[in-house]
Length: 354
Ligand code: FA5
Image (cartoon, rainbow, N blue to C red):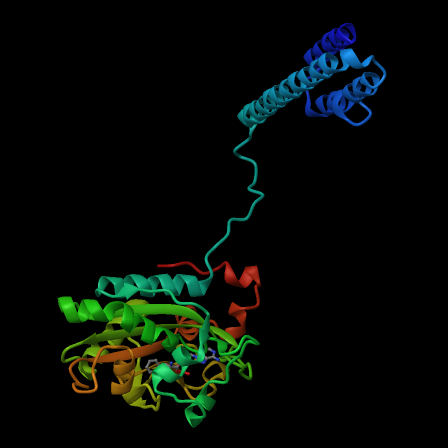
């Protein structure tokens, strides 16, 4: 057996030294280590030798098997490195003047607008927060002063999951309660006002048209401190819009009802597609509902742990829910909101940030 193994060792060594690619290395591996390979043959021969020689012969076969396995691994690594170097070496002959074959990707227009807004709000001291897309009924409605079976629920027909009490968030306001609990302690202990924006994807069971989608983006913002009033709200809205559009835009504020603000407003922007004359993008009204807002309802501040029952007006705050997708439509002159979700790269890759 010893002679047989030595003979195989020599044969293996000479064949291995001739190997220079992965394919021939694999062939050699099969010849020695597969079920029908040389090592298996040795094991079969082991059965035929006298019992008193079996132990030593078995050990020899095992050592041989381990040795060749280790040498295979080493050779495999050597070949891998050689091929890598060959590939890197070949880049020397790469012709930089050849036309570019790979088209570079671009950011989605909503991402561009979202990042721009985040920068604007960060420069005004706001924190940018993230929130999940699947939420529970409490955060989406009850914590916002919309109890079960309240008719205000009809304003947002959302998608309920089969998991009880879980739904796709129908508005970014669903994060208000969590943000208040997160930053409330800092407000109370350190007097640091709560200033946060939280963009996110929203879902509603909508009849889709040029300005309504079932999946769209909003950016919510809240500011809470002592003595916050509507004038703070108007200041931040105006600053944000003039930064985003870099030109004068006509806005109007009208009363709006949302159970989680009191008073509540609708901030509309004059349609920048038709200049106010009326078109499908603004449902022929000349105005586009862009950013509902208002002073946060005392109940919502209470559920968020900001005010107490005894002192319900210690802190006040405003909230807004900006329609990010509609803002992107106005900023880039996109006439139909469906363009954003259709995945048409020709349409989507032409937008650039300022
Ligand atoms: C809300 O979602 C409130 N949560 C906003 C709010 C926040 C009010 C804080 C007060 C205080 P509304 O359903 O109107 O409100 O939606 C807000 C904005 O999201 C709309 O003005 C619009 O710009 C955008 N939006 C709503 N539904 C759609 C839709 N189906 N497709 C595209 N954009 C939409």
